[in-house]
Image (cartoon, rainbow, N blue to C red; front, side):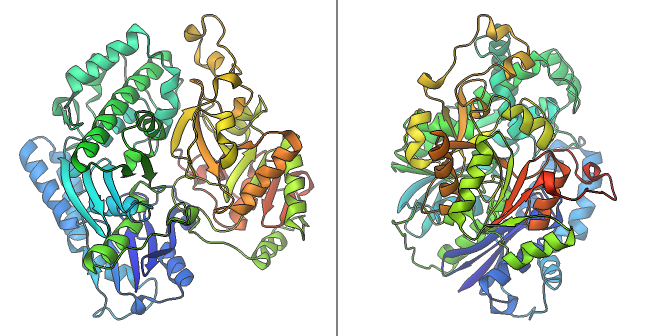
Length: 621
């Protein structure tokens, strides 16, 4: 039984295919179109999934869409009616689109599938689970738990903005929902907007900015008080009530009324790309603190309602890895699984799994010999030696091919130890927003200049943004106050105190740049300003090649971790093909590119000529 899942039309379109409950392939459309957060129907992603599964549209049991569009349309109409006459301009923009396209989504999906291949429209079965059920299924079914509380938190699905479910065997039971317009995800996105970042893209920047704020300061405490007394009422169970006088996302074309927020917080909305001031950092710290408080309360409520020892999480807010680390420290649950593609892309996988286990009532089998059912999230395309050599010929590129992979990793480990930046392209591409060692840019975490070099000369992005460590799973406790696993880079935990350098006197009063370039530990490139790190534990059983590379680096240096950042420049989706990777090498100050067993030395490549201003291709995120 093969089932295709689709998410589309909002952001992060994706496709996933399962066979008898096993995940065969999953990928975002953006990786093919090179448009970040591409919302278009995922024609390319579907083609790849069908090819990987060795099947056709006619052979599928069903095609499943990740939410119920008519229920969402009902929410829009009720919201506009409830807020009328406010929201007329937004109504005029959005409702004609719904009437023309999304009201008739079944026909639209069938029409779009014909762009993939010819098929029998009459026999095609379409299913539409609810949005939050798709999220819940994406987290619960790939987990290794027979019984689990499931917490999903995002902006909004149809009506639900957060839900608590109980997964048991093959079944998922919804226990509690928070409904629109009251939303933790939209609250956080409102601050993303006000602080000058892009909604549905820049939330992780806000999370990275927050530690530059001073939680002990009078200013941050004042911001927290204003948020909790004016903007949001937080209940004991983690549900929230948002004061709609201060939000316009329900009926407007913006997140908030700028003038009211300016009056509330004492400064104007920051414009994109303008300098960051301390008050921006402090407001970021305040909303991160409030968000963590809300999420912890929701987790406590999930424990109370289910009594389970296991927690699964999904939805866009589950990508807030700082909050996730805070949850773990509270020891509310014994075991945790967070869907690595927690946002809307993961809904494509979740809806397929929901159809298999709930609609078709198939029995669930768990393989306890594996970490989980996600296969390391390595679910995208991989490329042959022939395809790599075709790219090399196209660009007249110079390369060296290693017959021995062990010889290759020893050489690459030496490059890293010498301070070089290496693009690392191996095997199947990752599903979700994190590069997990198959489409990664790597560096030496001990190098005090590495964070600056990666941000300014490779990624072309803001200097305050931190980088993640990939650490051998067995060595994790040597570097961090954490003895568990984090294969999907979804948890933040502190660097061990013995590895830290003390703050200089008066550090909290330093400017942002002075704080940024203070060397905080003996692994400075991955130690954030608050001594934290977003950890990826690398396991031999799920990614042997990446594990071997870090092991080789450890043998040369004594250090069992390296810097890992996604293989792209700012505003670009993570690379997919060898050609994408080669272009990124030539457009940046990267030193080496490794694709499979092929090594490209930047210094030995022919002169790179661009027919276009390539940076204009990508809208800044």
